[in-house]
Amino acid sequence: MTTLDSKLQDVYDEVLGRNAGEQEFHQAVREVLESLGPVVSKHPEYVDAAVIRRICEPERQIIFRVPWTDDAGAVQLNRGFRVEFNSALGPYKGGLRFHPSVYLGIVKFLGFEQVFKNSLTGMPIGGGKGGSDFDPKGRSDAEVMRFCQSFMTELHRHIGEYTDVPAGDIGVGGREIGYLFGQYKRITNRYESGVLTGKGLSWGGSLVRTEATGYGTVFFVDEILKTSGDSFDGKKVVVSGSGNVAIYAVEKVHQLGGAVVACSDSAGYVVDEDGIDLELLKDVKEVRRARISEYADARPGARYVEGGSVWDVPCDIALPCATQNEIDEPEAIALVKGGAKIVAEGANMPCTPVAVRTFADAGVVFAPGKAANAGGVATSALEMQQNASRDAWSFEHTEERLAEIMRGIHHRCLTTADDYDVPGNYVAGANIAGFIKVADAMIALGVI
Image (cartoon, one colour):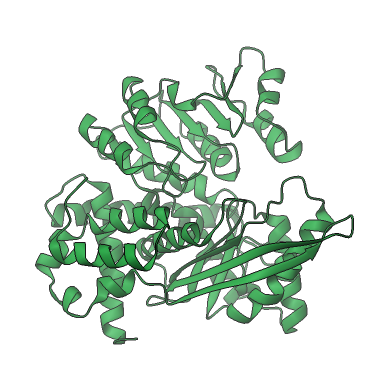
């Protein structure tokens, strides 16, 4: 574990004391602080103004109960969260996650990461995150609707297009966003399209938003490859997950000439050496909402492995697109042995600190999520632009804007790493570049 600068160690100790038991949040904070030693040496004003202490403390943390009635008429109870972390650059922006694992520590880790991710996009948006321990799996549409309406009945008073703009995350797709927006409109009597992103195309949504996170991750990797005169042509790629991020990462890799040979879900993974059949994968996951084993059942030559680790499959490029901390030391070692040269996070913090160190020691290029998966929130900001101007852009125009933003993020990461004498270190580059933009804005706005 990297030793922190003494000034930063004091901040980290305070974070541990204030946020006991919130391990994911501790991990996210430490990962950023480990990069900031050179910054506080060069810019003591960030310490003098307590910017680093303040940036680790959310501006607002909202917790509320969410009662709802299931189809059998029984009253159910969940807990809702919204952590409005930092608004120095603009209104809070970040997704809602509906999953049984959600608790305050996960929401704070996601919100903290979102602050720097949003900063890196260059868009005028702050960072926040929210969600609930509600599990939409196995629930009817009517049950999901009643839950979403109850959730928004409380959340509506805390959000707005100039205040806080939620979007989707794990467990929150177009269906859930629709129910949430409908209840917001009903309560406020305002068709405020910009209050939520990830909306349906017929009522204010943006083309490319569904594809954006997966596409953006692949665009970022493409920029990494270009730095050494390389491309996706002939590259073997392994992707974890089979949700939106994974599916559209597969799609873009194939468009750029690579071959995704394995992907997974929570039950196991499939290996298809001929390259994943994208249409079949979409049918299994988006239409049937089935287990990935059904892909292997329908695809000659593909094999399904129950349980196990998709990272045992040899590859040139690994794209973890499932969930936090899915790659620990054993998985990282397996990737190194399997020939991986680049690992880019399509999910939020899917690699543990020891995994990241394993990659660094082996010379594997590692792209952190706050840079590599920023395409989703970037396109959400583009959706906000379209809503504000009552406009709708073409798929091609929006995709090019996304690609341009990802090129900009890559450039900022590399040039910042050079400026702070850690050339090629995307983790340090992303953390420092994201931090400085927010920190300068916080100093400009005063002690608030």
